[in-house]
Length: 232
Image (cartoon, rainbow, N blue to C red; front, side, top):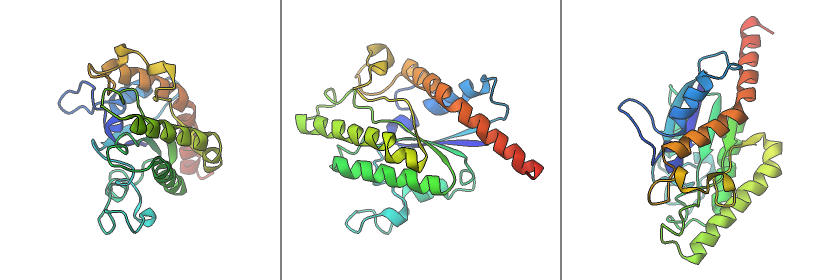
């Protein structure tokens, strides 16, 4: 049974310590947490498909690309990841996306629309989808103008609103909040020296929070898989 972490720098785990052959970020730490979770009986495999520098347009499924997007006609990241033989059968997808949309001059409303579209396509494919907010803790450090900072606030407001309302109807699940409005990660102990990315402690904290949220749904997935094998 399989997990995918898809999205941008935070999905990849930028800022975390990584050893040769071991993926950084949530993919590594959540794997360890799940392995030690007594309720979870199966062995879950984790795929780190975070792409540093990617934005929400890069991840749009081909069917959702808008004509004026510069990636029309190219095989985008969604197809590259979810059409792979290794990953097409994944049951659970964790999404961190939107961190690079400001730099790509993508309007906040479009960011939200893009991410919602991605979530809905994945749900239609039968995946459990977990979505976290966008980390904007380091926006001032990144030299963002007031307008760009406000844009990220609007992005997160849109995602939170979706998760509270339409997201529930879609079956999209809310991951831990990692935006600046949540106090959980507003400490230098969890951040890289530049204050932009999570460090090892930050990703450990994020993975623990995810494990607390996700364990019950994994047990349900395992139970459904067992029933299917037994012909029920």
